[in-house]
Amino acid sequence: MGFLTEPEPPRGVALDVLPGIRRIVAANPGPMTYWGTNTYLLEGPDGTWVLDPGPAAAAHVGAILAAAGRVARILVTHHHADHVGALPALLAATGAPVYGPALPPLDLEHKLVDGALCGEWQAVHTPGHAADHLCWERDETLFSGDQVMSWNSSVVTDMAAYVASLRRMLERPATLYLPGHGPPLAEPHRLVRHLLAHRLQREAAILRALAEGPTTIPAIVARLYPELDARLHAAAARSVTAHLDKLVAERRAREDGGLWHAA
Image: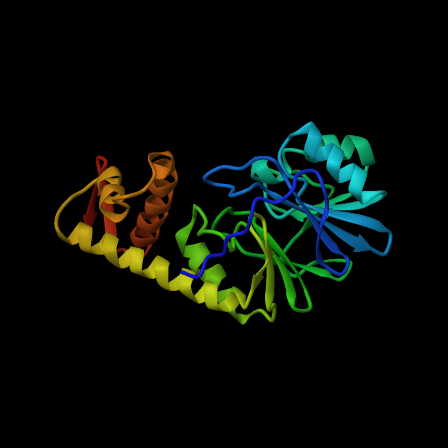
């Protein structure tokens, strides 16, 4: 796939992305987060809007406050801790209203459903990586969170929803994605098509494994990801489980006592 790389970005500073949009990359690098979580600062009509406060790290919160000036609003893509861990501290420091998903576990002041607006930014419900995942779109720019990242594919918890969300994103007008991790992604539909094809290929490979006889999730992970870093086995198992759940719902697979079978 056409994933992107970038040099390690400087920490604690706001980097220009587009006119009126900057990002601060949190110091939480890792095999799931690349160089770290992107916190975006948007110039709003009433002050700075912060999109995804990032992990619970005092230095990161301090960098946001130093770069933002007056924080007028906080926007959220989804509930994972590397995106909202800093939310309580940022709220305590600013008292800014928070806009984000209507689904639990977040209990936000302004709960937005699909299609709702926060100023000129439209919430686009894109479940799959997380049930509550929202992208934020204005004109041809879309904050894609962890649903579509530029540096790697995402861990998926609901494969049926994820595939449907990818197809929906192909219908959206955005020509630039600003992801939750990694650099901006131009011509994003090309990568979205690759991600969709990749997931369907994985599904076909799982079906072939089931056709050979009863098997387990660890055995499928070993078969599909023979060279995978051991630190990522749990994430791969979650994605395989999401594939299997989709196949069960479609009556193409079944589980019995920990063993998975072709239906």
